[in-house]
Length: 245
Image (tube, rainbow, N blue to C red):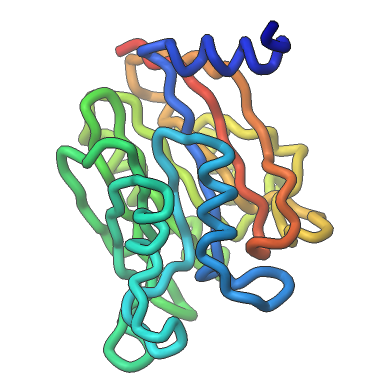
């Protein structure tokens, strides 16, 4: 007989309107033990069984990653479609940025530059049949993050379907920019649960937001932080939602 948690999971995956969204800053698969292990990160993702994942901090063909396309490697290991969004050119002709792993290929993709004083930033947008996911990794500078809000607000207005924004925002729930985001976005993860650093989390800087000015109904079923202290310096988060357009 299935346990209550197993039965809940089974009902979730049979629900055609259900979607599990995950966000994970993988630090190029370099763990807290300083070992680079793509399979370890992939196992974390596979354990969650998400429909779509926002990935931050991935190299594409850089020297430090020995020419490996990190997102493509993770896509192979998770049996997913990988979409890469470069933020900067980096380290011997390679690129560095964010990515999205999805069980179905996106209908359309866009990569839009965001303000970044210490390095260029981007937001990668993937449109799917029933929703849009934007993956981002925001600046370390408060002014850049505040300026990014106007940009993502304008982008979200362009889609007539649920629009999710996920990633590493380098801000805490008490910050000015988090309050400004709350004017148009709903945080779906638990802001009282910390995500960084992974071995002893003392702050929440990773989020999954829903653009709340859309005339669509999204029912949040659960949100969780994955208890993973080693594979990266961030803990992954995920939310389960039902989509009603």
